[in-house]
Length: 536
Picture 1 (cartoon, rainbow, N blue to C red):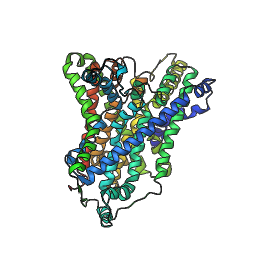
Picture 2: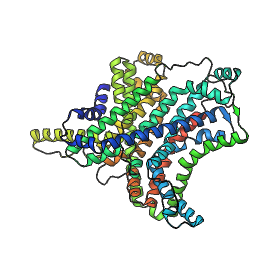
Picture 3: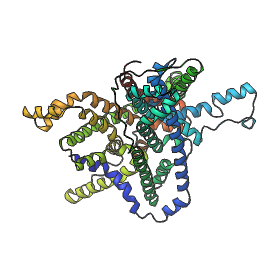
Picture 4: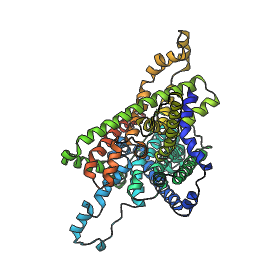
C-alpha cells in the first residue's frame, strides 16, 4: 500500500521531469532567446535577497530572545512568530495600498511639505524587486527564527560558559560558539524560506516581477507547444529546488555537533540595558510591527468600517469552500501519512524508506509546478476511463477529475503530504517498539495495533499534522488558482482577484480570515517553544 501511495503522489513530479525529453518545436529556443534569462536572473536575485534577509533577522532575534534579557524579551519569544500567519501576497496588497502615490503615506508627505507632483520628490517604488524581497522576508524569517531558537535552546550551557571563561564577550560567544553550533538548523531554516520564496506566485505577479513561477503559469495558459515549454521550465525550477536541498545537506554533512550536558539546564542570560536594550527591543519589534501588526490593523480597520461590503454572501460561500477543501485535505493527509509512517515502522527497509521519502518530497515543489503537473495527469486518467467505458458499455463518463475538487485535493496532497508525514513520523517514532510486541501478544494484528494502541498515543501529533495541513491549504494560492473547479473560488483566490483589481476593501475580510486561521499553528508553536526550556 505504501508503494501505491508513493507512486500516485510522485506521478505528477515524474511527468514534469520527463518533459525534458518532449519535443517543444521552436518554443524552447524562443524562451531561451527572450524571457528565460530574465526568469533566471530575477529568481536568483529574489533568492539571494530573501536568503540574506531571513538569515540576518531570524538568527539575530533568535539569539537575542534566547540568551539576552531586555524590555519585552519574554513577549518577543512568541510574538516573533506572528508574521508566519500572513501569506506574503497579503502583505503585498496592504503595503501597496499604504505606500503608493495616492496612499496615506505619500499623501501625508505631500501635504506636510507642500509637494504637488511626483517629480517634486523621490519615494521608493513598492512594486519592485526590492518590495517583493521585503514582503517575503517579513513573512519568511520565522522559519529561520524558529529553528535557530530551538538550536540555541538545545545548546549545552557548559559550552557557552566555557567561552565566557576564556574571555569571550557576548558578541564573540555568539559568533565563535553559538552560531557554528546552530549552523545546521539555521541553514535548514534558510532553505525552507528560499523554497517558499521560489514558489511564491501572488507577490511577484502582483508586483509585475517575471520569475519562474509567473512564467510557468503564463506560458501554460497559452496552450499548445507553449504548455510543453511551461513543463520544461517547471522541470528546470524543480532541478534548482532539489539542488538547493542537496547543497544544504552537503554543506552540513561534516557538521555533527554533540552536547555534553542536559539541555534542561537553564542557560545564563545577558542583561541588556541602556542603548543596547533599546536596540534589542527595536530589532525584535520592527519585524513584528511590519510583518503582522500593521497589515493586520489595516485589514481589520477596512473590514469593520466597510462591514456591509466585506461580509457579504460571497464571503461566507468562499469561506465554506475553503473550509471544505482544507478539512478534506487535512483528513486525507493524516490518514496517508499514518499509513506510510506505520508501513515504514513495520518494514524498515531501504526500499520502504525510498518510497516514503519519494512521496513526501512534494513540499519542495512550488504550487505552480504542482498545478501544471496535475492537469495532464487528470486529463489522461479521464480519457482512459472514458475510453474504457465507451468500449465496454458504450457510454461516455466525461471529465471525472479534470476541473473538479478531486484534482484540487490531489494537488494539495502532493504539495503538503510532507508536512503531515514528518509530524506523524516524529510522533510514531516516540512510541517504544515493545508496545507493538505487547499488542501482538494479546492477539492484535498490525491494523488493530495501529488503531487501538498507536493512534490514541499519537493523538497530539495527528492533531498537529491536521492543523498544519489545514492552514497551508487555506493559504495556498497558485495551485488553487490554476486547478480550482469552475465557480468554486476560495478565500485566497478571491483576495488575489480583488487585489489585482485594486479593490482592497472587498479583499480585506477574506484576507483577514486567512490570517486568523494562520494564527492557530503560530500560537501552538509559540506555546511549545515557551515550554521547551526552563525559565532563565
